[in-house]
Image (tube, rainbow, N blue to C red):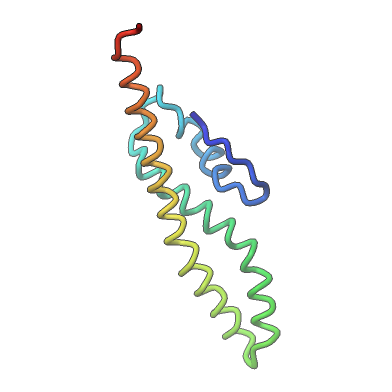
Length: 113
């Protein structure tokens, strides 16, 4: 039951699936699966957002009277915006996984007819 969104280079599912290939496999029991969902998707979102914030940091450094202040401002906004979004995506991914597992369990227990 792997996610099927494929929007390179901004594929948020790529890093979690590389680091934990069985994350979306409902047949395998993983310890701390929810924590893995949340942290891996947060890391993935932060890394993907970095691709957009590197140009912003360069422009901020060029336009700011003090280049360090421009870069620090861009880094601050990169972390402030991408971290909560990543955590939210991890929670939503975990919720979606749990919902699919419950649906699969109901289908297995229903009489066939």
